[in-house]
Each structure stands twice: as structure tokens, then as C-alpha cells.
Length: 102
Image 1 (cartoon, rainbow, N blue to C red):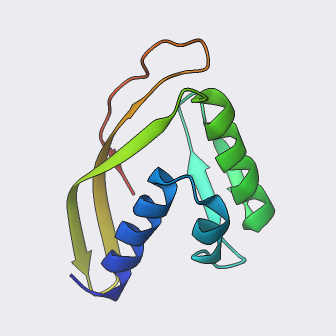
Image 2 (image 1 turned 180 degrees about the vertical axis):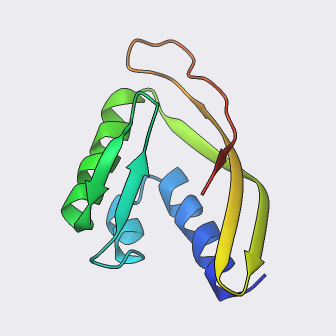
């Protein structure tokens, strides 16, 4: 894998360790997250928006959440990551286990 794929893997490792300050350092100031159709959905822009999204994830999955990379592909102009996650929702229910594509 190349440098960009390594950054994705590093970011997921930091997320799983809940090291959000170090994770935030990996993002450009102009970051944009569009997370639609989920309980943590919304459009988040800039590092402040990213911090709000991470806070929303933490509040929703206060019982913890863990990402696991299933496939990671790098092309010259894109990286595609498929992952699954397990988590405990704030109401103590098990969260859904899904595959997402970044």
C-alpha cells in the first residue's frame, strides 16, 4: 500500500484508540465529512465540524465503537476503504454492523 492508504489505516488505529487529538492532526483544515442516512449523519466542514462529528459519534456510541478494515485499495487518485464496525449505543443496545465505503 502507498502513503495515502497508510494514512487511512493510521487514522482508523487512532480512532480505535480514541486518540482524537492525534487523529485530528491527520486532516487538512478544509476537511468535509458527509455522513448521510445514519444516526451520526450530517454535513461537517472544517476541523471544528470534524470535531463535532467525532463528538456526535462519542455521544451516540458511548459504550464504545471499533472499526475494522476489511479491504483497502489505493489508486493513483483515490483510496477506497471498506470497514465494519461494532459498537454499543448510548442506550446500551448493540449498534449495527455495517460495511462503509470512504
